[in-house]
Image (cartoon, rainbow, N blue to C red; front, side, top):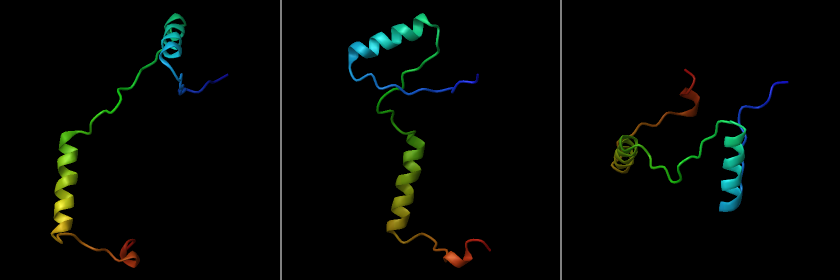
Length: 70
């Protein structure tokens, strides 16, 4: 039987979180804890800010809906 590759768990408190990590380690199940509030790539942020400034200055193009698939 094929099982899903991913499961998302919300332990709710620190005690349950620690217990779940211990169980996963004991069963030798790979897991990862994502970093919270991971910042965006600074280069990406710079591009977005530049684009917003260009829009404010009127430096953008408009494409009519009927021209999208031409």
